[in-house]
Amino acid sequence: MKFKSFALTFFSICVATTCGTEAAKAASLSVVADGLNNPRNFDWASDGSIYLTESGAGGDGNGGANCIPSPSAQYIPLCSGKTGSVVKITPDGQKQAVLPNLTSIALVPSGEQAAGPADWKFDSKGNAYFLVGLAGDPNNRDTVLQSPDLGKLYKVDLSTGSLTTLADFAQYEAKNNPDGTDLISNPYAFTIKGDTAYVVDGGGNSIYSVDLNGGGIKNVAALPEKPISPNKLQFPTLPEGITDPTGGAEPPPGYTIAPNGLPVSNQSVPTGITVAPDGSLTVSEYTYFPYPENEARIFKVDPDTLQTQVLADGFTQLTGVTYDSDGNLYALQHINQSEWKAIQQGGVITGDVSGSITKIGKDGTRETIWSGNGLEAASGLFFGPDGNLYTSNRSRLVAGERGGQLVKVDIKSGSTSGGATKVPEPASVIGLLLATAVGAKAMKRKHQEELLAKVETF
Image (tube, rainbow, N blue to C red):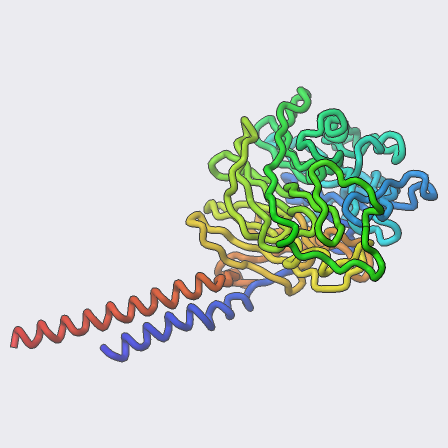
């Protein structure tokens, strides 16, 4: 009896400590396609092929004539070029061009932080839809950039490649400015429910509903801000000799000036969206500069009113959310630390750009499914028809030595290629150890009761 109790207790401790590590080792990440230019969101066609958007690498902007200041990279130029595309990745891994030579704008000369082709979705009838970003002042789109195709949602005729405009978010931002702050539009991702598309605009800090039958924008709402005192934020060190990085300019609407002179907003930056099992929408947040760690939220959004409530908090720079068939939520952290600690302005990687995937159970418990180990600066998170997770890895990097990839994370329990991949958070481990202690105490009490019963019988 004593041996059994000890063995069970020891095994429980093993599960809480060592066995958690072994499960992490059993996870697998594999590359489905590489050589991609700023890969973003994607979807599966009925034949199992993946239609993936590449935001591209920008260009020279016609010798600099078609360039705009970046709103998030110390005003380094974003210049246009025909380097964006939509590619089809067949089940055997072959890449085929679907919509080539699309407009892309990106930082010069790195090609990093591109905006352009951003998302692709099929509806339940097999119709295809295509979202294009912008990342800048929408008033410069048609004039300076001379790229009126940016900042829109399209319906796609796959037989001809023709595009029909369903919504112009850049134009709407310029005329209405839903969040009341600076004029920026960057449609980043969308999902479909019935005959309505729901689009998150990371530049406009808003969510839109769009009639897929041609009725245009139906509703729009700004995502709630999250005020944090600039004194509590961590900032990069300014170059020596710079005391006013804004050059004396007035901060944009909704911004404050931090003690170090940098402009700071409280804006929410929505990046990922999906339909929850209960029919509501789930939206992930990236947060504003300086991208404070453990401050990004996940929202529950009413699809009719677009009103929001916080579903979960405490993340860092989220870029995707999705649900498994059991109703558990998965969230993708683009980078596990503040972006500026890992990537210099202009796109030079100087630190660790590792990201992670967290599982949030229906009871609210969290488990790290994957962290680092090849997962870097990823965007978009989706379950494939095979039950595995897929994401666009190195989603802000251009093709080359460290270019973009489409990767698969095998999380299927009992899979021959990966096995269980859950890594308990510290709280989960502690909880299991506490449960073990309680279980051991209960067994000891039961053993004492059995002995007492024997004495009384004797």
